[in-house]
Length: 208
Image (tube, rainbow, N blue to C red; front, top):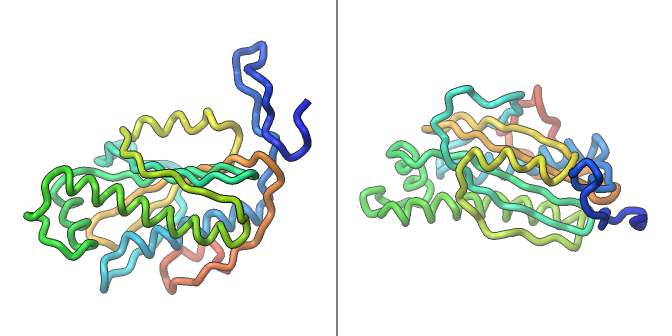
């Protein structure tokens, strides 16, 4: 039997499914992770002089232009967090990321554009990692991976956890992002994140 507060080390059950992580997230912790993600998205996706609004949504649009997702993770001895920023690699998106980086989009090759998208994901999750690290000292983040959006269906393989979908508006193009947190121990904390006026839909998230 696994020790309390530790991930199960048992192999797949007789039914062929892996053992679930032995952890729980309090409602306060869920809201805190949502707030941390929302503020990071609003700050990191808005070029200078622009502002973004972030709201939680129940589902993604049926027909999405976003075929790719920048995926990064934050891991600790108590939970695993994954954030996926869904994106499209078209001219409108290229213009937005060029504005975000203060460059002329005509100067970017396709690879430079993709690198900028990955770096934006890195900045978003880096900001989250700094905030999360205030409450959990043993955390580390992955490097960004640009995947097909359909790969996000495999997040369920991490086990039972907390999922949220975000819609970022107010910019030249909209963005969608997915947050997934799976606990391997009891996680309960209250985040104190710098509030961005009008950045987060107050009907969906409470800012601390």
